[in-house]
Amino acid sequence: MQSRYLLDPSVQVAVKKVPFSTDEEKLVSLREVHFLAQLNHPNVVQFMRAIERPVSRELWIVMEYMKGGTLAQAVCP
Image: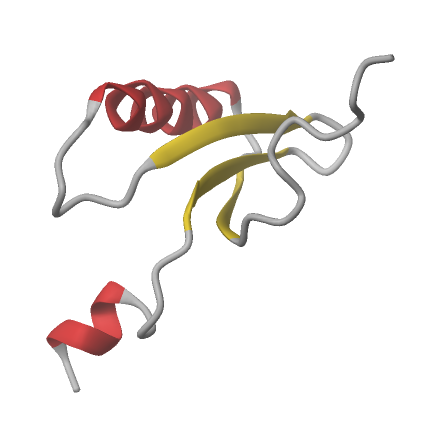
């Protein structure tokens, strides 16, 4: 039987929900996904997968969860 989970359900992840209203906006987001998928560096959050949600017109980018808040919070305390 195939698992309904695409990721281990015990692993905590971060999900970036990127709305798009045009094909151009969607393409820009897909370029980001393509770029993230190629990165492998200890100082960069690990990309796990992308999920397109056509009904809500969103692209969900699933990444490794990092404790400590957002990058913006770290840069501008």
